[in-house]
Length: 264
Image (cartoon, rainbow, N blue to C red; front, side, top):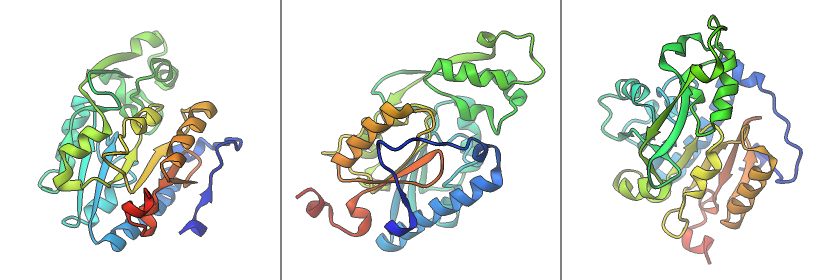
C-alpha cells in the first residue's frame, strides 16, 4: 500500500494549494482516493466501523458520503456534528439508515466546548463552499473567514460570527459507547478546522485503536503538526499525505498485522 502514498516527514516544509478547496472537481479526485482506501480496508476485513468528526450536512464536500451510501449494511458509522441546525439537515440526509448513528456534539474534550461559527443569517453570504464548514474553536480563524462574506461590508467582523456551546466528548468515549456498531478500531475521519490534533489527542490508545485516521493539517501550523506526528508515530502509525490539506495515519493493523503483534 505504501507505493500509493506520498509519505510525509514531520520536519518537511509544508506547502499548500488552497485552490484545491475551491474546486469541487479536484476535491472529488482526492476523495476518490480516500474512498479507495476505505474500500480496501472493507475488503480486507469484510466489515468496517467508521467515526466521522465534523460531518456537517453529510453531503457537501464530504469524503465518506459515497462510501457509506454504497456500502449500506456492511459499514457501521457514527457521524458527529456540533451545530444543531446543521445536525437537522444531516439527520434528513441519513434518514432510514439503521447502521448509521448521529451525534449532535463536539469532540476533543470531556465537557462543554465553545465553538464559533458564521451567524446563521449570513450563511448564504459566504463566498466559499459552505459557511457551516468553517465552524471552529479558534475564534480568530472564523473571524478571518468572515471577511469572505459578500454584500454585508458594513457589518463589523465581530458581528458576523457567534459562539455556540456544544456538549463535548472524547474520541474514546464515543467509540466505547458505540462499540457494538463500530468496534474499537474504526476508521477515524476528522475535519475539525484547526482542532484536529486535539481530537486525536483525546484517544486513549490503551482502550481503542483506530485502524486509520484521516485528518486536516492546513490550520495546525508546523509545531502542532510535528507534535501530532510524534504522537502517532509513537503509537505505531505511518503517516502519508493524501492531499495538500489532509494526511492519513495507517496503523500496522491496516496492513493485516494483528493488534497483539503490533503492541508486542
